[in-house]
Length: 429
Image (cartoon, rainbow, N blue to C red; front, top):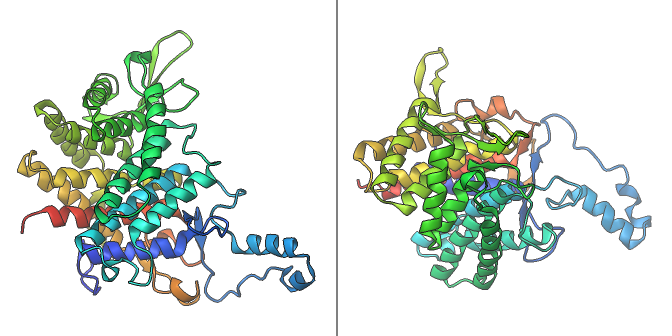
């Protein structure tokens, strides 16, 4: 699956390359504020052979009052956090998580400037992640509270991991990270009720409980000492949203006007990931057995074939879910499959299967990448990579030159490459 022609021969090298590509193409300060960082929703390079579009007002700048010149500059610069652009809170939360992945590898390299993913003169991944959390708070109207409990759960998990990284590297920001944890824990406590027999509400409308909220909240509780709460949520998921015929977790449940429980039966890749993570975190014989069975079901039902140029099947990779929010889904699953692949409590066959799902999918993302060409960008953009939204499809087809590239899909590939780096580093050689 993996490319043999690239000098970036290890998963750590490839993950660093993905980190550099995403942060360079999408990373911005929030409205030019120092100490902040956010990911742009979309990056779009120039189509080769077409002249760059000129701002028709640029020649008038010197004649404008200073405020008008500033507003014109803001429009041209298209800062990621412009309030006119869509706000995807949970994309940014996973951006934090990816940076923490990279930061942990930097820590393994000694946490020195030489170990930094983007070179000794650039910020460390942990430092950039801390700026990103600051940017999220400012962009989110000076609060970490959001209308969606799943969004908040993803940020809480990322901030918890960032706090542990900050502790180990003696970096500042731990008081802020603790505030994130305290604030969002209150939100989760309010969202976990006895309605529908348990589980976590998806949003503050409080009319739908689902796996996307319940699973990461369960994982957060498990990682912060609330094992009983986590187990109760896992038991609710198993009783309410687990489909024994597929061995996978359905999307959610709601009450209809007649007071009957109605299931949303869609099966998404990412829902399986945090359930798997929570089962492993809480542990115990029953949970570990569930985790092993879940890995097997993912292998059987959530993979797609990879075909060679002659149409023959050359292997299989995890199914991807397209663009928009779905652009993150398979990367999230890979994050937690990597934990399974490194967990000695699971059967060897399960660990091997989980590891192979991660590395085969990461290999397909890597071999299918394309570089930003000289005609598409300038300066540091050239030579960075764009990854496909589908592991089984090359990036040149999914994102040809001049196409708009979404942050979610690039985070997905980066997350998968980080998962491959993690699972191979944890596997005895």
